Image (cartoon, rainbow, N blue to C red):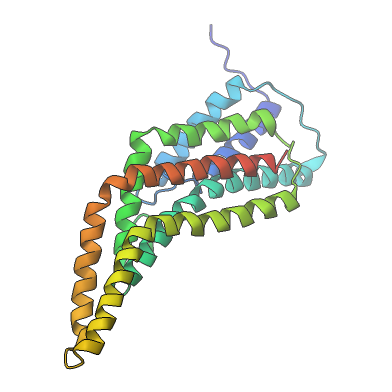
Length: 259
């Protein structure tokens, strides 16, 4: 006979687990895609929370009244959001690199509406972002991201957060510097070719001033930019490795700053 009885304490404990996992999925890459129905996200979060509830050792919650319980819920929300945002911000490396590439090849004005992020994004940034998301699924990186929030209960139990804001500030500074370094590494082939092209156009403008280098340069920049993107498309797995390693490092640093 199956025992389906439960107590108020078990419901409170399950709600705290659900809150952390749901807030994580609302911010983490791949899980926060806007084209996924919200009921699917909620159902998936509830299923994961039910599994985690069964495998976690039950500990007593020490609180007095609804106000203290609300504080615990808020701490769980902040914990899930910080871990999810740590992974999601790393994905902005691709968007930043795409914006810089479009500025160099002259497509910065040709933005489009991205239904995933619900913002106006650059053409190259959207293209690279979808490629990296496909590689994320192929390499099962979404499993690592999901395991990260589940394993966080081992080091950050329910109501066991000890926020080290100085360490978190150091983590954010490290993330900001890494974003620009990795983005420039991605942009470097296009940037080098466009810089050489600009030097050639500058020399031609002095040699043949009667030519309209502005009109010629726009077409050449787009042609050279697309050619370089086509030739370097094979480097996308290495680009995704950069991004995924950054996700692992920053998520570990954020979790370390909360215990």
